[in-house]
Image (cartoon, rainbow, N blue to C red; front, top):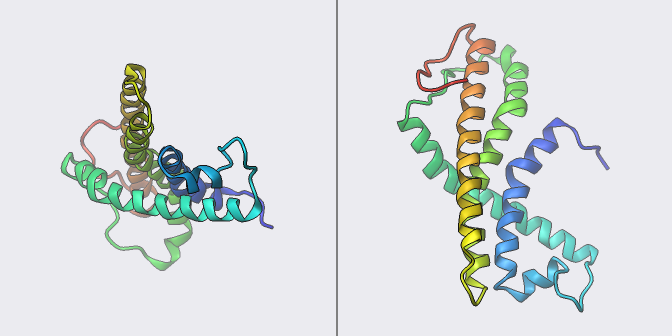
Length: 177
């Protein structure tokens, strides 16, 4: 088995964690998911259940990533956050991969969780008989943090791409720390 390193850690935070967050929300409504997660008191986790839940988390994470691409990436582009990358020279692929692993995967995590968290929160809240105002407050606070994190990591990613691949700064003119 391979050790955790920057490439598979990046994939874990970009897709599996947001997908798992959505699975937790679905567990409140789907007994098969609740049982697969071992959340039911009369069941214990199994290797097969772990595999199925991991595959479900990856699938949901990729679905969330598609929604992120449609909504968040488009919004950030409209707000002026643009990639400096025009064409990638073959000798620069190693530098590109470094930037992707150090910055873009973190952006994917922030933006994917930005999409998954309100859905999971709504599913969790819908399973309760009474409304919990702290749930909404917590989701709103986390959404603001995730939105700031998504902007920051994507801006840094684009800036580093500009520095490493084109030897200059990016065309980003909005807030970049």
